[in-house]
Length: 136
Image (cartoon, helix red, strand yellow):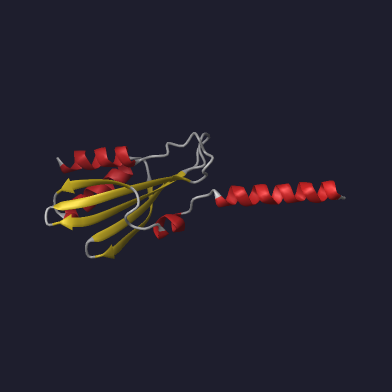
């Protein structure tokens, strides 16, 4: 009797750990806006925002949501779907006007499953490179 109870308890603990390690789009939106890899770009807010939206698509990510947080801040949450090698990934990009001719872009990448070692894991370099190309 106690062996069966112990086995059930182990399964429940394992399942709870598995679910706690999952990232969600809602969780990405709830993260503080100043979290993520930061790079600043020269240009006006509208131009950098347009370049960022294109950069996310060029990185092979599907936009899950776009939100204008305020007049000088926008948030994009995008995802990479599951494949034979990955459970998928979530990426949040925050575009924020920081000065009259400077715009800050922050990229936060999360694997949908923390234990997913085959996922790319960090999209910041790809997105930043795509933005730089678009702004030339």
